[in-house]
Structures are given as C-alpha cells and as structure tokens.
Image (cartoon, rainbow, N blue to C red; front, top):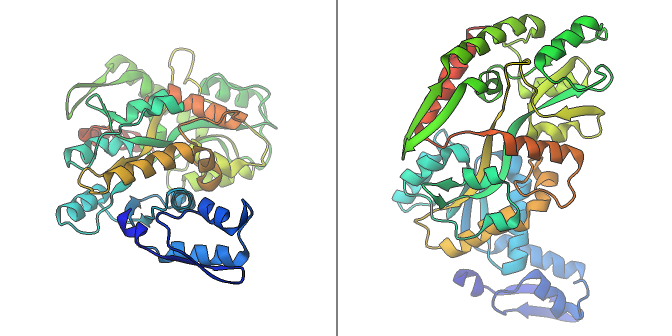
Length: 396
C-alpha cells in the first residue's frame, strides 16, 4: 500500500492536465474529481488505465489454472479501482506448484503473497508453513458447507473458498422420456428403445481420471482421519467386490473408448448427439449453454448400489511468510466473496456462494457439490487415487 500511495497518477483533464497526487486515488474518486458524479472523459479513462498498468505491484497473486485468467485479471482491476492496491496476477505453469511457492518463499524470491490451490493440497501447503489463518467468516457470506469444511484444517479456517468441481449427469432430451434413477435403468431403457442412427455411446465419462471413476466404488469406501497427516482408507470388502463386479458387467453396455476419451471429446460427442448421456465436471456445464439437454446428480448404480461423486474445492490462501498479509487477505476475501457473482461468466466455474436466484443448472450443480464426498486434503490420499486409476484401467 505504501508504495502505491507514493505514486502520482496523472490524467488529462478538461482545459489542461490534472495531477492526481492524492493518496490511494481510486476510480470512484476519479469520477468525483471529474465532475459531480459524472463519467470521466475518454482521455481520463485512458490515463487511468495507463496509471494502472504502470503502477508497481503491492501484492503478488499466483494461480495455475488458465481458465481463471480473465476472472482474476478482472478481480485485480476491480480491487485496484476500489482500494488503490495493485495486485499482480501471475499464472504459473510449473511441475511442482506448491514446491515452487515454498522454494521462492524460503529463498526470499518473487514468492506470492496469496495464491490459489485445490483443497486436496491444503495440508501440504500448511505443513510447508505457507498458510495463514482466515479471520473472515465465510459462512456469513452463504458459502456452501462443503466449502467451509474443505477450507478448514485442524479446526482452523485457512482457505478462502472460491469454486468447486464435482461430477453431474447430463442426458439427451430427445431420447430419454424421464430421468433414469440408476445406471441400470439407463441400460434397461436403451435395450428397450432403439437409439438414433448417429449414436456411438450410451454413456461416456473420462475413465482415465479417478475423479470420474469414484462414483462406481464410492459406497464401499470411507475416509477416516484419526490424527493429523494420517489418512485411513477403509474398504467394505463385500461392497467393494460387488461394485467392481457390477462395473465390469455394465462396461459391456457402455463401450467407452479408453484410448481416446477426454472431457473435451465427451462434450463434443454430446453436443453432436453421438453420446446419449455423460458424467462431466460442473465446470464444463458452461459449454452446454444454448443446447437443450437435461441435468441431474449422478444416479445410483442399481437398486442396491448407490453412487456418489467426489468434490474438489478451489480456494485462495494467504502466504504466512508475506509481509503484505493484511492486503493479501483483503484481496482474497474480495475475489472470493465480493466478486462471487462474476465468477461463472468470466471463468465457467461456479462459486461456492450461490447466486441469489440461481438458474436450474447452477442449482443442480450446487446441490451436487453439497452432497458430494470431499476429496481429502491429506498428502497420503494421493496413494488412494493412484490405486483407483490402476484398478479401473485393468478393465480396459
């Protein structure tokens, strides 16, 4: 903040040059200066844009996922307009993201004051000492219960929850008369009704990603954390074997191409009518806007085997080593709460804070997230996901 307050923001004014040397000038302040609440001139806006671009950064923010770029850039600009604090938004593409943050921090390099992580990395970041406590009450902002849980570690709220990922089920209106209440009902309906000529797949999902495979074994697995940094994965062996046996059986009906399938190809096939139903990420739903389709939570496997998706929460966290902790925390709250209503339009992701009047797609996505199984933040949880991918791959 002090660095910004020492800057002179120059802007062209009517009849000459108006020097804006006041401390912490914001865009709203510019409007007042330029004339009784009226809009500043084009020249003034251009000068203000130049001042924003040339201002030195007060806070550094890192993220990995490029799909958030437009949102974070808009959030940083809006935050500058409001506070005069410049946040440098930097997308980092590195093999070990958390490790890179730690290394830069320990070397007193260009480390981030605040950064974005997925909830399953919270324990790792905390163990590195890279997370400070979130002093804000995100529950008061109507954040989802799962979001609060995902952002909490050892009884302390750490993260500023932003958005979520979970699986939902989409299907073609022109083929199915009613929503299938199970995957078995889906198969039975298909056996009794001839699909259109161009259809290639009854159901698609990315079989190579454990995130999408989890619903097939979800009812037989329980995650139990009895102590810090120690996760126990408890299997109900009888149910687990039933799940795998049923999974093997239904593959004969679905014929998924494990060599070529991807979230991208699934969306393209669905939009082209080549796929009758699919399990996709809630963050892919924006791709279906303008297309007539139906949406529901993941159906059960059959009458006796339920299915639940898992969920991941993306969140901002403040680096505990930052000397700009107060400004970083304020930006984290601004981006996740104040800007929540802008998130979906700018990124395709749904906020953990629901809209005041959500449309039917957002409502189904939000309900699916709230009822999903949270992916554990334990470092050793990675072993479970690797094992699940290896198990599923044996069937293809």
